[in-house]
Image 1: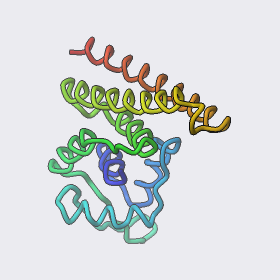
Image 2: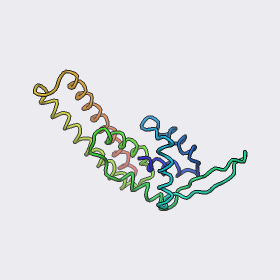
Image 3: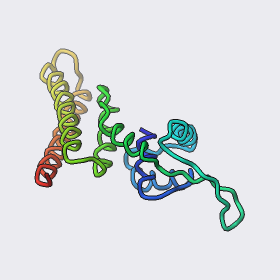
Length: 174
């Protein structure tokens, strides 16, 4: 996800590593907060693969700064990363799906349709899994597990409703 976030924030303008982290925090803090320790190697990988270019410049104070910019290959990679299959781990899915939705403005109408469909399908599966466990509640779950399962079902139901709204909006823009 770090690479996706970096590419997304660099769409608007060239940034230093510090500014990349600041922009990611400004936009995505409710979902994730990558550290410099995660950003630095990710930036290097993206440059090595040709998705970013870098240039060194002296700041007004005379400090050497490295500025990163997204390449055309990087723009294509951003779309690919957004459309990449999501994890079948519900916790990772939920976090990553929200980030991908937040970046969906860079996708075409058809790509958005595909993204929303895949997110809704997996969220529906996770909700059903939780409902199945809750329906069999008297065998293996305690009171606290039931409360958490009920909340999980509500979370996925709400998330599915949001995605359905996005699907309708996207269909109206086609």
